[in-house]
Length: 382
Image (cartoon, rainbow, N blue to C red; front, side, top):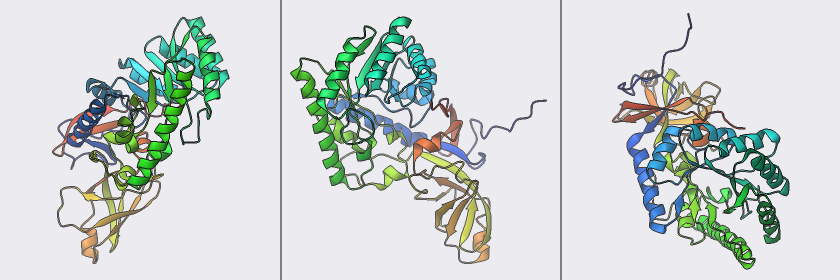
């Protein structure tokens, strides 16, 4: 007999009966975010290539493409496999990679999808070009330029031109544009400061484009940007494609920064948890800690009681491996013990690594599970 734990939920279950911890998507908020991003990008005539590292689910990628996205970004090659298998036809690896194993994956993927990749070194171009030619596939290549992130990417126009020339020397590679991503600008809390930094990044990207144009090289794609700067990048006149990911979910970190434009995103991702202990006034303990909730961007900033009104205010104050410590405004033991067994909804501080801790999303509307979507790219980080 094969012994296995029961499923966390089935379609038709209410949130009050779902096993915890579980990862939930509020479908109404999710759909509103998808529609709003489609409106934003269409208004400015830029392509939307959402970052699948945020959700790691081919079910979500399919819905994004159906809503108008040109494809998806993946951060790692192995992460791209479930999306390719699900029929996502255009995948951009928005990251550099080195090594024979990685090159083999790129060549294999390119036989099934239109694959584009990032480079910032000659050795990456040569290894990929030789392997792609042997395999009889063609791969689009976008050199990454540093526009303020100071992580990957070339820093000068001369370095960019050397990469473009190296790509042109490889028959199986095709230069299609540049990646100009400034991740550090995404989470600047002050709207005015974030606007200024996004403007600097766009100016630097435009400078690289001008360098190419001066050599008679067409730069059809300038891709980059993220949720925090997407409305600025889309309106810049520089970016032809944007790569937001977290807009689907709006985690606690993004929810805490200032927004000065017209667009507003809704929290749609929550961890459902149960209060498992409440033995003393002022403290309650829930059943999700570090193994079910990423805290690199801070602890959950809000705690919502499910099916309860007028209950004590709760604050998530510490995460242990399997326990979440909650500060409760309950003043007496009876008030505290009444919390035992209560369900709470927690918006994670950082959606990407939280998602990577789960196998599935439970999709709900009006507190009823209506679909279950697998997180089929979970753990694929090569």
